Length: 195
Image (tube, one colour):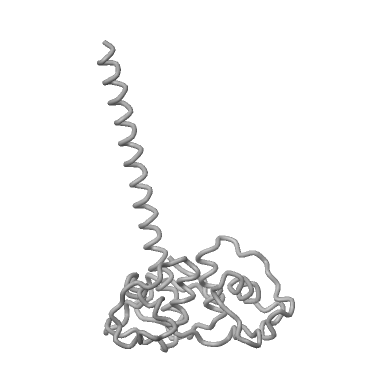
């Protein structure tokens, strides 16, 4: 699997070590939306956000990400598209993009119970979003995300989704098979009773 990050394809499985290119808010919006929505609708800024130039390559992604709550503007209606993304901020974006559960348990020693992002950090452990980290007892919430880390995290979530969808399909097939056997049994026992 590979993900498109600002014009460059990053092969997730082939990258054993994170590439050090820092992820921006615009990059995150693009990568998350492309991985979640098959066709991104055209959206224009129309002057709503002062720091999102018309015809910027990320314009529609930033506008759509704001619409879905993945990104939010500051009090002055700036989207800060070129601002680097921390792990804490990326976990929130990932949660909103994929509708992931919040308030999952976590054991990170560096996450305060009063931190604004605490509701999102459990997904990091649940999905093993940072597999390169040697110390799994710390999240490093203020660490800046790289493109490779973002691609790996999105890939981990998508793989879990694929497994969950597959398990749901298997469960439904088993239910249908069981319902078919039950119907056959009922037909056979009704015929037996009548005969």
